[in-house]
Image 1: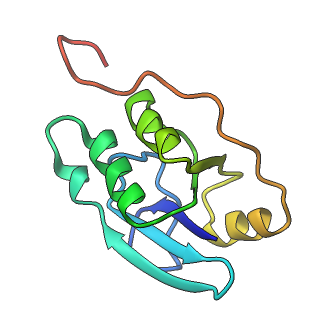
Image 2: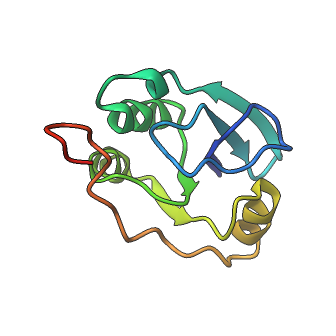
Length: 123
């Protein structure tokens, strides 16, 4: 299964990024082969719609699951429409989350926030 984790740097020593849409990189991890790669999240610098753009790049990567601490509703709609499973992180360690996935200890991310849109003074 190909999974994606938003991360702070393009290294396995980095941490899970708390922001999905504004994460600098995404770790692409293949559970069967343990193959790892990183993609630059070009949506991170977007003025608006970063979550949707990031979600589309995840869909385009062929991911089957995402492990993330949170996700905005616009991005979640794109991800769910593609049939990608969203798991909630257990902490900010990549290795801990990969191990938890392998052991079936991750729970589904079912609390989706409204997003952090900077329109009209709303945050």
